Image 1 (cartoon, rainbow, N blue to C red):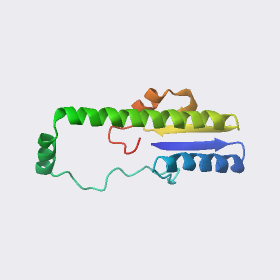
Image 2: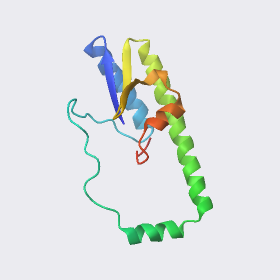
Image 3: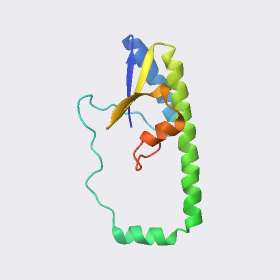
Length: 127
C-alpha cells in the first residue's frame, strides 16, 4: 500500500510522518519512502515451489487455516481502524493522507476499515 501525505507546510507533513511511523512501529512494521514517479516492483522474480506448496496445503487442516485467516482479518481490521483514526486526527492539523492503489487515489479518512482492507491486494503483508 502506498500512503501519500500532503500538508500545508513541510513541518506539518514531517510531524504527520512521525506520527504514522510511531503507529507502524507499534505493529512491528516500518514505513519506507518510495519514489514519487516510479512504480513499485512486485516480487523478486522467485517462484513458489509447487511441491512444497502442495505439501503445505495438504498438511494444514482446514479448520486451523480458517482460524488463522479469521485472526489475520481481525488484526488487519483493527490496524486499519487505527490508521484511519490517525488520519482523522491529522486532518484536524491540516494534513491530508491519501491511499494510492493502482485503480485510484482515495482520501484515507473517508474510508471504513473494511473499505481500506478491500483496497489492499490479497498478498499484502502486515496489512
